[in-house]
Image (cartoon, rainbow, N blue to C red; front, side, top):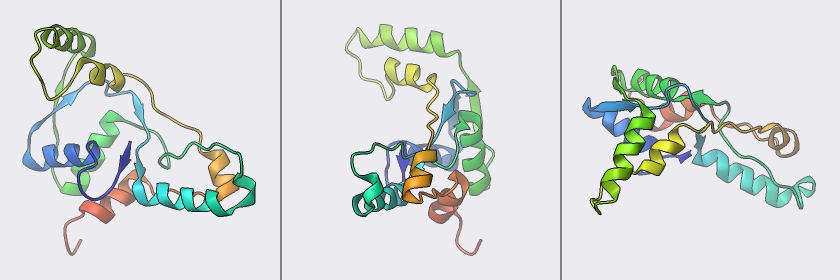
Length: 153
């Protein structure tokens, strides 16, 4: 989940929903996500291109630490000065309902497979990148503050 300025199709949409006061689906609130700031991805790519130790190696490039969906939503709300409105939803039932609707050919803003992915833990070990590349990603909060903090804050 790479995020940055503009429409990244993930975090930017969450930010906009919270900013508008829209309901946020509370699906898989305890599952882990490790969003990474685009500037950190670029820094890791550049480091891997010039450091001999990186030759032939594969690295997980992710955010500073894994966060639950609830932590992501709360952090965005804190930065925007908003209280996110979370609507708890049973993920299994939602996924089944969406799958049924999809069989009709109706296009929805979210698909059953996206709901299922919300239930997968997405936590990665970035220790090798830290050690070999000097990779030091921003925390989720610090990156969001760079992008979305109100002027003068």
